[in-house]
Image (cartoon, rainbow, N blue to C red; front, side):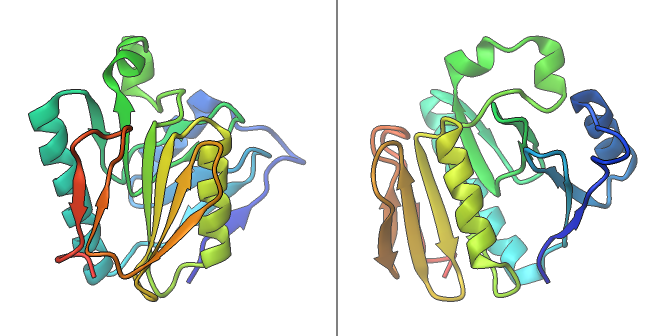
Length: 191
């Protein structure tokens, strides 16, 4: 089941602070907001997808702890992108100086910044086109590197700033390139 879209725009606009509060008081519902103000209700994922996501986040987190170059995030954070959308990637990372430039209030809410790196996992119930559009949106809003990991087809689409999307079939690993120097994602426990 893919996301459900709700459009309140003809009646009222939900401001960033209101959207944050809505997410806090409805903690069991996963929301995202499109740039046009429509809300997406995201379905919960199954155990297998959640386990694969935990593995991805753990690998990113361990690398980040060792390198201390930035801040790693799991799937429950919302980022306010420059276009006004609020997105929640499955895993993401932000350079430390960009994080440090945010106020304490911005850090405690939905940070108003696009991550430098984003990863999305596609399970068999996700719409591929919606996730591809989301990856393009990240790139258009400043993400330097993005991975769309299609679990069903064992493919990875790599999104880089200013370059065409690269498609890999069943890679054993992926390099974080110069965005995540020294990071290598091992797919052994993800596929």
